[in-house]
Length: 636
Image 1 (cartoon, one colour):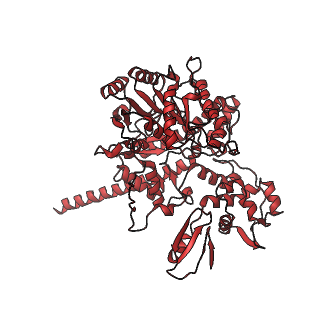
Image 2 (cartoon, rainbow, N blue to C red):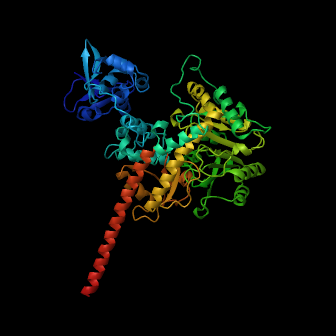
Image 3 (tube, one colour):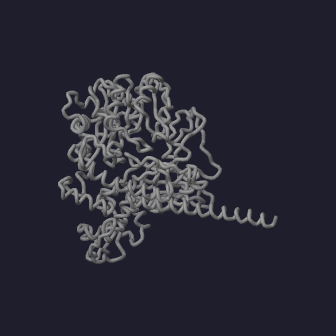
């Protein structure tokens, strides 16, 4: 018999306990599935495809899609070939298999699918209602809300495509394979996997609040909060912005025979020139030493940039601060030529280090390299202005290479501005480099955070030519270079004028979310000793909350039950090779306000419910103890 259901198809003789040959309709996987498990396996589908197909037939889309309405007839209930829908660009980005599309269409409410002479066709069951009048609300209009909320949720919260596959079956552990080890996951990936085990997936993401993952929302400005949009309108009226929608929208990648060949391992020359020009225009006007394409390497993401740099390092003592970015831990443990030396930062000093202490650490420990994120992930603390200038000077004088992860360089909320402007702020050590080929300053940045395009995986290293040559050599056997079509499509995004305009919008939006988050945390009694000056993270001290919420693991597990994801503080105790026995920061958690305002609000509501529930339980327990003590005293 032939079985077809929810994107799976199989051929074979079926008996209870028999094995049926089943394969995904996308043609990428073929597995043997016991018949008893077949019904479970066949429920797996692509939630993203389902959302996209549902949108095409939604009222919201048909009110504006004249072409599709023409195809569907007067009431939009006519039949259309499923192959037409399967040929739409956004469907093609998910799958090119017509069978998979048809199976997904069959499972969508409000649609009917039939076979007409072997050709699958689909139609809406409900006639298209008249388009309602626009009524403004907090996030867009009433008519926009249903689909825009869906779009907003998808854009701001990445989710695993197949959560069923992330949890081993009962009693099963990882199967050891000769020659391979279990590789630890970074903290953020760990918490996302744990969330998946608790029901988080692409299909359920709209019910959750992901405040654990460091991903910026990719939503359009029309979906931003009303107060933010009003502020953007004011800036347009003042001539600071051209429009409320933003300077650039990347809607497609051009692929042709010219960009399907191998590219340069350090990146396409056009994009490298654009990056160099961006730094010169933003930070180095009037300076004699300027960056060129030879000072830039394009890489497929920030972690790959760090991997290339570590691979190119000599036998070195490398200093890194605590707390800092979770991925540094496992990365630094992989390179035996690197002796990583932790430099703890005191919470009493707001996780900062003085210039005198900095020089003493470099000289006293014989550091050849110093690695840090600026602004800092997770604390949000920022080195800028004269302080940053002195850091660069100390690096120059001690010949200690300063590797600065500046991936959040435009998420800045301080009043000290560099360069100075009343409407926008951005920070980079590139401003204080004297000689671009002699000063030992290495900068990492990219489109991931500041351009809000993490899915493109386009980042860069800006450094002296000698360093770029070394990371290019490392890239020749590590990764071979980034995608050429993607790089060439990104060149317009580096236009300095457009970047400034986008920075203004970015800081209006994220300042609004930051201030909202800080107010809510204060009302809940969660301590934030030093509000974030940069990034989109808040480093929260939970020590004063009732047990088990006063420990990062207890807080994390209780919040998962409320469908809120946070990141435990212990993951930011960068400990390569787990050489130190004791962990720090077990009374801290990192909260991200990268997601949409609506999702941040939902997450904070969940946190408040959990805290109130445990405070009430603690009070009841205290009352019981008091009553018991009083009763015992009277009896005595």
